[in-house]
Length: 466
Ligand code: 5GP
Ligand code: SF4
Ligand code: MG
Image (cartoon, rainbow, N blue to C red; front, top):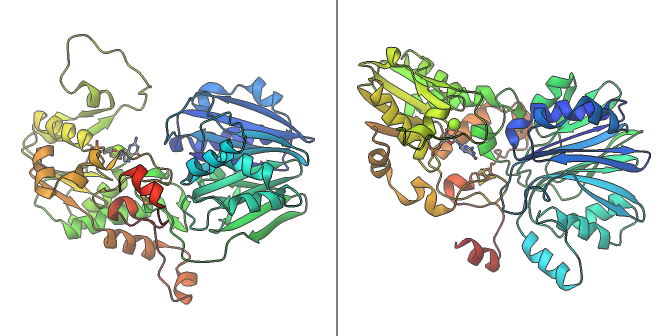
């Protein structure tokens, strides 16, 4: 999901709209904005894309000088209309609008306990447990009560809470999902990724730290440490695939990181070939890096249609490879008789990659070598990225040769986890800070290794079949 927040700006709703527009890639299943107008919340949300839903009139109606917004990317089932964010709540000490990116892993248990105790839930969203925990917490004032509520949840959260006179930005103790702080004139902004700041002309200040809560009010920004500083575990997959390439997340510029992954891939898995082509758009930066490091020319042998909607009408008579051709098509004049290296960021189920290989051969390629700019994905993510179950992940059930045969490729090469982490560390602009504390920056790499940074309860092990 994407979160965006702004405090103290006369055009808060319009800037939230623009911020969400820049963060559309983080979720396409729904969008919502809540504004705070003299203690009253205005709210609009819909199962739409940002560009399709908001109108000028609607944004005018969303009065108030502060706002939070959300783009939804579903990682759990539920009712897509009812489960949209922002969530709102009305407490005796004021109203609150909440947006959340991440996944509270112990939400089912907390919810069951709360329901046994009489709580009535209105959505299936894990974030709603926070609303109930805040309502029941006995702290003084909403900031204190939110901090107390967070003490009993586990999992990942980059969380914004809009209160009558304050905007809070909170990152979970491991810092699994990104969240950055920026400034626009006199007002402050919070966003999942820095690309949202660029669009509205805000200046990037810094990341919200793992376990930190920033409190933005008329008086400026204050910082509180909700959890003691310990080893963080930012999601390495954000850098591989999820974040926009023009963002900087966790102190690492995304595009250069992807390009360097491609360079390392060329060193680790060289091959004699005529052409390096990316799977657009996710493989472009890595393919350029592969081409640079190998000296093999780069070209766009696959063209992507950028206007693919949610549904398309298929003719009754089957068309070969229809599903993948909707999105991607090969350029035969580039490929005829060529040995090609195809670079993509990752393989999940392997179904797309398999169709691409066949498509390239049909367009005349004489050899097709798959190169993947990350390690094999072997385990599901429980922290906010929608990966399928272990059984559906091709690399969890097949070895390299079986994968090669399934894809019908001439060869397959993946990067290693240690090479990925080395790339990220070498590009971290906060390297100095990290090395002076004499500890290497750690990442969450659980989908590539099965090593989860949050210990499972017995119940979770059973639930996930681990
Ligand atoms: P596969 O060949 O395994 O079917 O699909 C691999 C493709 O899925 C890659 O191009 C990669 O960019 C993309 N991908 C990786 N993770 C995700 C994800 O979480 N959501 C979506 N929609 N695509 C993903
Ligand atoms: Fe990111 Fe993978 Fe960890 Fe999920 S399991 S948070 S996708 S690195
Ligand atoms: Mg892709």
